[in-house]
Length: 201
Image 1 (cartoon, rainbow, N blue to C red):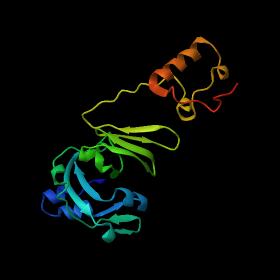
Image 2: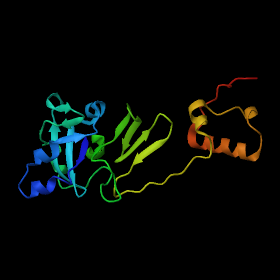
Image 3: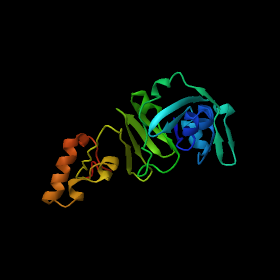
Image 4: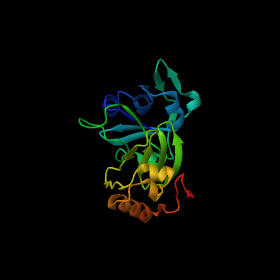
């Protein structure tokens, strides 16, 4: 799903001077062809952080000319219930998201979970409305629903222990801190993961 911010044109729709199609499907810059292919099944117009119109997109008739996208679409029956609902993406406003276009996994608005899949931005999953993306640098980005909170609790051991396995006890200093990290690692259920030195005498 692609969300578009129609703050400039939707007042004309309300005044009867423009159609919803012209406002939402109109020309949008900054949408890469790869993003269009990945998210362009549905486009939703957002005004005052409320969804005001949703269209099913026909990518075969959608134009990408001069760096701008003009969607070909029809009012969506599948997603019609989203009209009037709060913006499911990042909030727009004075202190909000700056770009007029943002992308959203349809699983977020479908209310279901989306298993881990590989995207251009990294590995992504949707669970209970939370969208977690792990980038190529190993860092995480979490999109949190507006009415929910998130608590971050870092684990006390290095990420390499999870990806490469726990080092042999002889590979770390046998002090209290190292032993405490190993205990925490095992408590988190990683005891079956062993490092590259497993079996070394």
